[in-house]
Length: 463
Image (cartoon, rainbow, N blue to C red; front, side, top):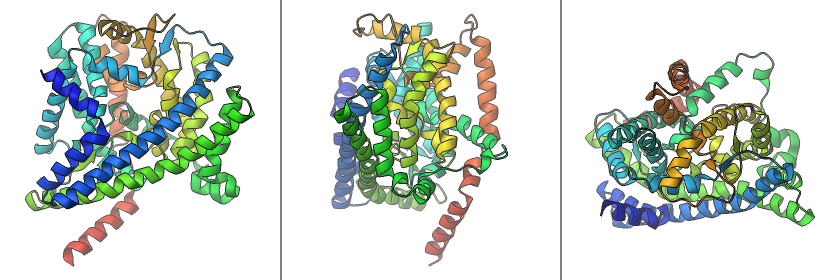
C-alpha cells in the first residue's frame, strides 16, 4: 500500500506535484489561493521548460559523447548505465517505500530543532538518499542499518545545503533556494578546499577566465551563445560526426546555454512570492529564523561557466577513464550529466573556468574510483530488482552513482573486513578536516553581497 502510494506520487512528476505542493504551501503561508496557485503553476511550467532543455542537452550530447567512446574503441568491464537506471534500481529496492516518508519526517524534525534551515521539496531526487540506504541494505542485509545510513546521509546533506546557500543566492542568483542534491553538494567541501589552495599558488591565482572576462576579451566568441556553438562543434568533430551533425550539435549546445537561464528565471518568477511568504511567515512566528527551499540542482546547470566546463570535460572524462589505473568503468550514458557533476567545481571558484576545469578533473578522478569500487554492490542491486542488463555487460555503475562520496565512506567504514575500511577512516577524517578548514570561506567569498543584503533588510525593517 505504501509503495503503491509512493509510486503514484513519483510517477506524477515534479511538473504536476510541485504546483500542487506549492499552492498548498502558499495557502498555509497565508498568501491566498490566487497568488499561491499562480506561483505554483509558474513553478511547474518552469520545471517543464528546464526538463525540455535538459532533454535537448542529453539527447544531443549523449549520443555524441557515446560516439567518441566507440570511436576510441574503449574496452572496460563496468558499464555506465546512467542515472535513470540508478534511480529506477534505488526506487525498486525494499528500502525505498520507508525512506521517502522518513526523510520528510526527519527534515521537519531537524528544521524544528534548528539543526537545518532547509526544507527539501526535491522529492524526486530522494533517490540519491535511497541509494545510500539501498547500498547499505545489500551490503549488510539489514533494513535498520540501511535506514540509519540513509537518514545520516540526509542530515549531512541538509547541513551542506545550508552551508552552500550564499553561493546559490549570490553566484547563481537564486535567493531563498538551496540544492540538497546529495551527490553534487557532497563535493562542495573538497572543491572549496581546492579553491583555497589555488588562491595560494603564485601566478595561477591571477588567472581568471569567467564568461564576463571572456566576453570582454574575445568579443562575440566569449558570449555564451557562441561559446556553446564552438564547444558543440568541437565535441561533434571528436565524435566523428558529418558536417550536418557537427553544426546541428553546435546550434543545440548554443540553445542550451541560452534557453536554460531563461527557463530558470521563469521558475524563479513563481518561486519568489512563495519564498518571500515563507520568510514573512517564519519571521512573524520565529524571529531571526530563516528557511531555505530545497530544489533540484537542474535549476543551476545552465550557468554559462558551468556549461562551458561541463562540455570541455566530455573528452577529458573519456581520457581519464583510459589513463586512471584504478578505473574499470566505461563512461557512457552519464556523460550527458556532467553539467551536474561539475556544479561545485565551478561554483567554488565563482565561475572561473580555468579553476573549474582543474577542479572538475579532481572530481571525476574521485567519481571513477567510487563508481568502480561500488560496482559490485550496484550490480547486486540491479539483479535483485530485475534490471535487464545490456548485452555483454557483467557489472554496472555510473558517473552519477560514483558521485556519492558520503555513502561510500559510511558503507566502507561499517565493514572492518573490507580492504577499504582503513581508506574510509582516512577519507572521513580528511573530508571532515577539509570542511572545517573552509567552513567560513563561502560567507567570506560573498561578504560584500551579504553585507549589502543585510543593510537592505535593516533599512526595510527600520523604514
